[in-house]
Each structure stands twice: as structure tokens, then as C-alpha cells.
Length: 565
Image (cartoon, rainbow, N blue to C red; front, side):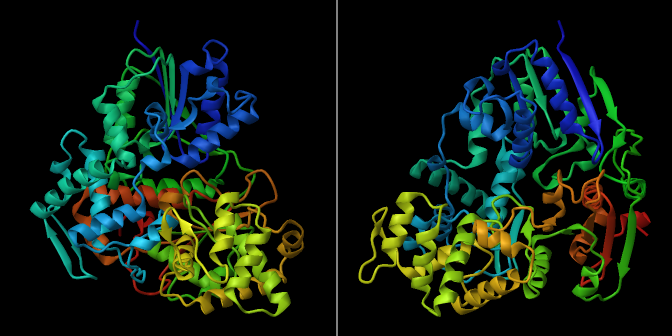
């Protein structure tokens, strides 16, 4: 008997996730929970699925192994299968050590661990990508795109113009081989390694039903794993939107989703509960410029709001852009570099914000930093200026650090000695460098600047509605109402509430580099990728959309809603 397969297509805001939750609830009356898997692409998506399953009463106890496959990423499915721990994974410090071995530059990031600090000579962070970081991206992409023969998908050369470094294909292949051996020598894995292990080991599960959300985001490697674990499964439900397939740079393609239509029942979700009619029609204008194949859809608005679209052109001040905000707002940009420019503008004023990005920490969203801010408030009351005293106060009041780490850090700032931490000596300067990496600051940022920013932040809070809440709860509400995001990280999120008085504004900075503009003229897939990512950006709002063309006055403007003209 052939398996039953259903493919659900849903445009932005049509409720794909809600639909699969309803389907799962119905099927779980016939199938034991541990014989069903509900999987998705991102950690954020998996968490949302799990939370909805809890609210619906489907998951009654998160610790119950019966529900272990409900609301997982494909990565976590196999991570759990192999019994791996976070200590099995390569750290930022170990990546930096490898780059030191092959003598290429590397920019440490948020994955840096405090125990890495003693062995590393820090370079001031720049806004430029370094060669080592680029190599790791290419190594990962090659394995995702060509799991059987990764070297075939490595680039012909890699160049870092900022640091005047260039590598040929032969050298890239050499470094790839050395990286594989390096991980074997230190007995560490990265996240793609255990997916390759699962493919090699032909891992399967005893599932009777597999449900996968955001199917269009699967890489070729993940798609192969899906085909592997779905063999012999009775019921397969796939949900996705080919118009939101925006991870082309990792080999993802809408063709995987479109191909699944063969021998499947196809369902189209045709009501967008998020977007007003004006936003939906604007989105369709954008998608009309796509050159590749699409699933035909017709979507109407289920929103009670009329919607508004405004296009701002010319050299604009940031304050002029702020005047367009109505309700909750997200600032969206193509690149992380542009996101950083928006951050700088918000911090100048200062305006509390958060960032729609996994593992991103700011003074407004991370408990540890809120605690340290609270310590600095106490410091301000005493008139003290010593960083050591500030951190001691913060550590004394914190509720977020584990007891062992809290004790170690308290000792760290003691008068005479620095304690042993994992057999390595950690100094105050090293801790401060680690702390800067965990926030938005660079190693080149003076401590006085950071302290001044924090005091400015505190003074600002006193003038906002957050202050009374902050004083009582020693933290700011997690929903600040001002967000920043790249187009890619915005997918699956929204600002405002469609059916209520909470308005939402998406401010989309429509800028790309001239190099990218020239490249997309020659590459149909690249062009379609840019069109889809722009569509994702403009459909995050429940009310008002503002397109900004020309802010910073230095980039080429990509206008798919003008059909490329």
C-alpha cells in the first residue's frame, strides 16, 4: 500500500503551522505520539510548534519521552539519535585555533567560550568578514549541497579584499582536508557532521507519520535525510511555500517542495490572516517578477485592517524614518552590516530594541546583561566608578548565572588572585573581552564607552514606561516593540496583531551592493532568491509597510515591484 502524502502550500500569514497542529491533533487519536515526528527547519520554528502543542494539550509533559519527536529540528532529531552533547561540538575558540594552524585570519563570534580566552591573541573586531570565517561557511555549504562529494562544491577561489588574502581551489581543498583531520584529532564535530553520519549510517526510525513544516528551507543534505527516514512511513504531511524559499546560498531550492506534489494530495491555504489586502497585492507584484516555476495560488486577506504602503526615496535622516512608525515595528535589511547601521542609530537616541536572530544578546533581552545593568544602577547610586565593584554588585544580585560560574566569577574579581577556571588562568581583561564578544561591542571599544552607554541606557529607561516595571522586576519586558532583522531572520515572524488595535509597521531598507546587482543580472537563481527574500520582508507587517530607498545614499536599489525596471 502506497503511503498517503499531503502537500500544504501556504503564503505568508495563512496559518501553515496552525494547520499542521490541527492535523497532528487529529492523527494522534489514531497514532501513538512516539510514532509521529513533527519537524521543521529552524530552532525558532521548532520551539513555536512545541509551544502550540503544549497549549493545545497535546504535549502534557515536556520531559515525557513519549513526546520526544514532536517539535524538533532535523538537526536535533539526529543529535539526539547519536546521544551527542554540546561538549561534542566544535567551539569558536577551536575554530580560531585551526585558523592559526593554517595561518589565516578568523573573527571570533558569539560561540566563543570563556575557557577559550587564555589561548587566544585577540584582534579587534572589524566589520569585514575574515578569510577563516569564509572558509568555514564554504566548507559547510559544500557538505550541505554535495554530501557525497563535498570537494566538488568548494569554490574556485576565496578572496578577502580587506585583509589582502586569496586562496586558490587547490589550497581550499587542502585546508578542507586539514579541517576534517583536525576535528578527528580533537574528537569534535560540527552540526553538519552528524547529519552526514546519519546519511552514511542509513539511520531510520519507526515512524508511522512524519510532518515537516517549512519544507522549502531544506538543503539537499536534509532533503536526502527526509527521503531516507520517510521510507515505509504510512502518512507524510509537508507544509511550505515555494515563494518563501530564501536559503539558495545553502543549496535550498523550491524544486524540492514542488517535486513533492507528484502522487500527493495538494492543499492551498488561501486566506492570509496577517496581511491586509494592500500588502498582499504588493507582495504579488513582487512575485510576478520571478523567473522560475511557482505553485499557482490565490490568496485573499482575512485581516480587519486596510493596510498602508509608503515608499521613501532620497537621502533620509533616521529621525524622518522613525516618524513613520505606528505601533510595534521591525527594521529589516538585506545584510547584517546594514542591521549594525540601524543598531547604531537606535543606540544613539537611545531606543530599546531586540534583534530577530538566534542567540543574539542585547542589554534589553539577555538576563545576564540586565543583571549587570542592575548592578550598575546600584553603582550609580553609590557614586563608585570601579568596574570591579559594579560586577561584584551585579553578581551578588543575579539570578541567572549558575551557582558554580557565579562563584568563580565572584572570586575572579577578588583582591589578589585569579582563580583557576578549567585549569586556565582568566584575567579581568580577558573576562571583559569575552563579555564584549557576548554583546554588541567590539574588542576595540573602550570600557569607558560601554559604561557610558549603559548609564545612558539607564537614564533613558527612567523616562520610559519600562522603568517602574524594571525597578520592580529587575528586568525589562521581553516584548519591547522595536525589532531589527535581516530579511532571512524575519521569516516566520510578524509585527502587530491582525485582529486587534495593536498596529504593526515593517520598515524595509531596500538596498543591495552594486556587486550583487551585477551578479543577479547573470544568474536567474540569484535573482529569484533576492525577489523571494524581499517578498518575505514586506509581508511581516499586519498594518503598515514602509520601503526606504536611498538611506545612507551609497547602495544600488533593487526594485522587484517595478518588475526590474
